[in-house]
Length: 231
Image 1: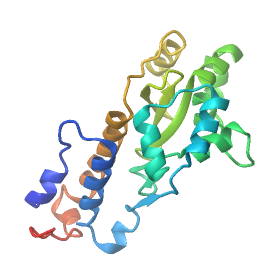
Image 2: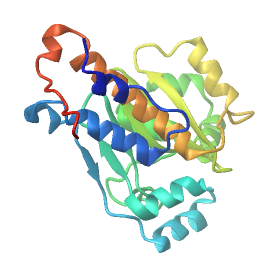
Image 3: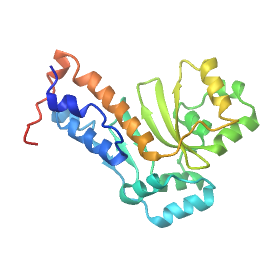
């Protein structure tokens, strides 16, 4: 059976915020062998200066949730792990660089960003008009990405009102359901208030993927070491 302490850490407590979710993730990675844990560590960027955030808000015409602004001021962006099962939150400085068309900075409008990840999505050209593409890019800004596997990503975004939402996209299955969801975003935003809940939910997905790989079979649990009850 899974170590009781690890098992308890795998479950998200009610009302968990972004900082607590990251702390719980780090505690779980302590149970991994060092050669595995190094690829699952959290890399924190420099905190974003208030002036950077203010410049972004002024130039982008997007609002940002107060919780996200507080996170940026204290932590900036973060990278949670690498490769599959990783989560990346872009800092305000990265978003501002994109807004200012800095060299090699990806565009963070919803469709533009997805296309940059996959080196183009020709089905978008067929599915969306030029005006629809512009509207989706102008109304939804990607602030983070969860790499579920090689084919599937979850895009954490904010709308112009500063509400958070997530769009799931699988490069091999752009079906009518996905199209209808994205077309629906042209008429009303499915985003909801609050950065903490949205980001913590993405951290939980990364934790679930981590648990599935390392803690759910005898062979895989063999690479994990026990967390001391005194920790």
